[in-house]
Image (cartoon, rainbow, N blue to C red; front, side):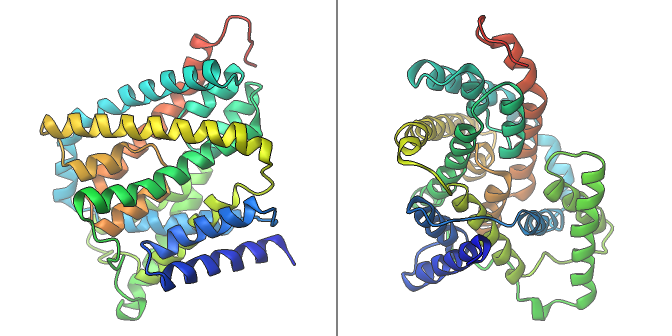
Length: 344
């Protein structure tokens, strides 16, 4: 059987199992755990990149559709916490570099780009060009995203009593077809335009900008329906879990174990920054945790949508983090590299 078909079926079983057991976020966590378990047992797993990217456009439209003039005005007051994003990114990079390089013995390029909390594809490209271990980088970043996505719902439920069973939207049947057509246009056109312009995170940011413009103009009046958000969760979860395909026990013992330890450090650092910001009365604690958690932009957007967080606050901080990492990572890699190593 085709690996993609197997992956799809396994992810579907994960959703069914989570629903049967009444576990939270079945459309996101179900595929993650099912595909992870299948990958670790040697079952061939493979995601569908085009569909995964297409699903991310739904999240971009969902965020952009929430924009209002009042919301834009409130973004001006975010500057104190936005200034802390580069600080936290630098702390993560320095801590992670020492952790992977000194404690686990990874080479400098792998340690540095494994520590950087950027997008998976970007860090793999930079790391490969620098002579790093691409397989190790892939597993480190997949583990980072998975642990953050799994840990945050627990924290949100335990500390803030968040209701993770909230409907992410209204049923598609209740929305006017013209609004649904506008959402499809914003998603596809925004994605392709942003891609042609070379924008990072094009599949999310392009649709976000297109839908935000139409929302501010009063043309787009609704967010994507619940069915679309569930589909996005499903394919994102399937993509995260299937990245462990072909992992060996040697890689689990060294790379995945090292990545899990790093994730523990990341969670502690996130809580420290969030608590400091909360005590300084700069932002609500729940939004701060979602904004500063160094997970995947798409995955954290899903969580923010479900718990009803301030989308503009969360997305603005993640966009800045990715921007800082993509622009700064290659520069700082050359400044802090080991003297005997040459980064191409």
